[in-house]
Image 1 (spheres, one colour):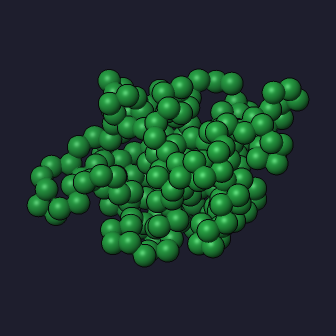
Image 2: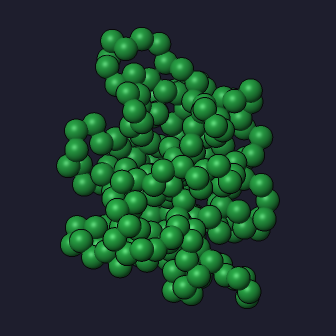
Length: 227
């Protein structure tokens, strides 16, 4: 597999969102599963097949659910810029600590463009979005964008398996179906991992060279409506 910064070993050692940590404690399960039905259809290994819970991916998925349901203040927003009935960019306002990441994703070249700004309108200047590294970004804001691109039906990177597992995860969380939450969490993480790291023409595009000196190269962002 090609090296992708989102999946460096340290990202797997981060704390899981609290509700997932509790589920692992309750079920006495680990962050890795060798059960075949916990693995994505894209996981084609014939020996030692496994799926891992990836903390940044699960954080991203939870916030994407919150965006859709809009039950929390400042939940963020996601949308597309549509030109002549064709998606040009995926767009997102992603809440992160005391800041909001305002960003776009160009699926044609796999590049992100964005800035961070304080949630407080008088919070000061905007800053460049950090690269994915220890002390910078965990990658969750970027993974949220790729997850979003996977559930937009008119997207080139819409994926039936991811969308189905995402919707099942939402349902299971609402109903407190612990085993189903765990299964869908493994599937969502493994699906996105397999599709980002595939190294084929069908892989979700990501330009590995877009971070420079620990920051996202493209920090300029013209106004794009979130719809």
